[in-house]
Length: 354
Image 1 (cartoon, one colour):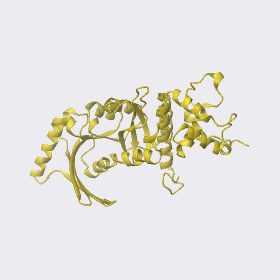
Image 2: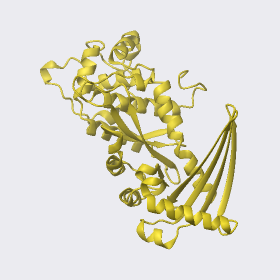
Image 3: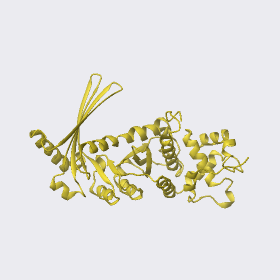
Image 4: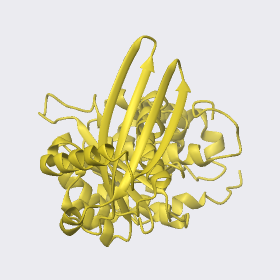
């Protein structure tokens, strides 16, 4: 059977170092990566599933892979991926993203963490894997990830993730945990803008913003830009009121390139249940309320477009891969598979349908 040219995406994984001894190799590393990626795209959520998928599709695989020794066993898959260097793997993913030549100018890049709940291992005393993800919401693309053992370690992980991402021109959004001066500095040094939520962890600034908008309210919000959105879906009504003003000089002096501050009032009605919430944010963007409202709203797309899809379509929360770096590599494969599926426009179907 004639072998056709391999997909271009696999060329970005050619730099991966094969961790196996030469005499033990029966399968090419590039073949193993190709089979695992295709398995991830088709919903295989364990190495045994990848092996089953490979054997079912072996005739198709052989049209573009030599597979001299057939499909690798699930033990081989698990062993190889547990030994791969995660930094090299992330670098390969970054090369693929760079090859897309994306224009991130003005695009929301939401950074948020997700815990793989079943990835803990009591026998070895290893906690659940926690990944910090960078998601380009409008482009439907995972730009990168970084592992940390605990959610509390996100604060130190985000600056490290920012160092490996190419985000020039983007607008990086982060929740209140990451409202840190070092993080704002890193984002600006990378050539991007920031929108950071403010809550009780920045107590003094939170109190300043609260008083600022109380004062504006007493003046009927003169000098403040306002934007209102209303959404109705799944039996729930939600109204959001956004208020944006120039950053006070005292705050601008303390935060790198701070230009605007904002308040969001959310009103939700679901059946007979009512809820209200007020939150604040700071940004390096100018005080243009519609633009800032879009970025604030887009930040939460990381929950639905990335985290929810990974759990519902790829069963990530149920993954029990625990050996070595295997769980982290598999998580990267799932994010790559999700990006490919979401960006594909040749088939009008749900993710699961594709």
